[in-house]
Length: 474
Ligand code: TRP
Ligand code: ZN
Image: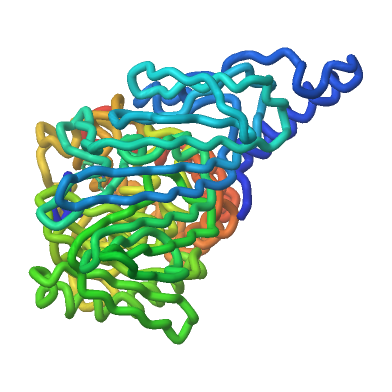
């Protein structure tokens, strides 16, 4: 429960729909002027999605509908060969646009099948197609690249992205690491479907998101083909490689489970992984139907210091305890299905996943959520818990810090007390039903809670999320 945690603690979104509507306007105007088509004037897409915490994450001017990634990783040389085929839709007339990619060597870029001019500028891969990309139309970008991927160091000092291990790689992209292994529109505002095909030396397993379509061994290498059809933020993609024991089954609810476990963690992981179907069923009752068709876990043996809620298949750096499994599973609803539009709203991920841990304990013979709340509230005003408000962490350095997790969960507990259990759980289910597959903001969550409860909650949200220091009365 104390983060950063070792074991810590196909709908488009409203925003994107709005962009699509706006995008349609210039097309119509251009058509009237007879200027539509490849000769239309365009402007460059922005180099970032406009997030002050990570100004260069994501890009402007287009939405990626689908990523087709074909990767080959040599675990002994640590060399990665990649080919990324992006199907994207322009949201403005684009003279050029950026992708996020760091390290690695780009050997070619095509736009709609024709070679495009590109240059590197820090973490931006700047692509200039031969012709303007027209607002509202789809285009296809192919990037071929290679090299030795290296993780990025986040503002809080942790490593994220492609992290080499003794038998492969632990691939975790939150908040910035997707760009270490594929060219992306790497901000959670942009969600896409993925096909990830990974070839590794025979004997290693490569695990990504969604369903395993097939696996084939030839000439000493095995290729794994994965598909995630549900919209996914780039940071939730993985292509983790290692020597894994694999277990596959389908739950009575029809969820396809794929677990990959490092043998060194197998005995520790087994009793916890056995509970995954019952945890998902319990969470479905509380949060609404499980948002995806597949599930599972990747339990690696790596010194990373945190787990990640990779979509459909959370990634653990060692055998998780039950409360960590509950936490990462809860993120499938809160974070993965309902996604952030800005990193400052991170409590919508971490506060909710932490509160799921409290609820699980409460309903399974452990401490009540009230007791967990009280223990935290007893901490003095000087405690780090009160260092900054959960709803406004201030910078990317703070997004995985205690106030976000713990005070975020305390906020939900205060909400529950204010509206009562019945409305509280209705709010959680209405939230996932209304925003699942897309995005949600703190303001939208407050409004929904007010609508369902019929209560004014601005004081509560203001106090618990946005006021500096320890709130006076709980
Ligand atoms: N979101 C992860 C969790 O389940 C934590 C996490 C992801 C993290 N990336 C990180 C923590 C980087 C610290 C640093 O809580
Ligand atoms: Zn979390």
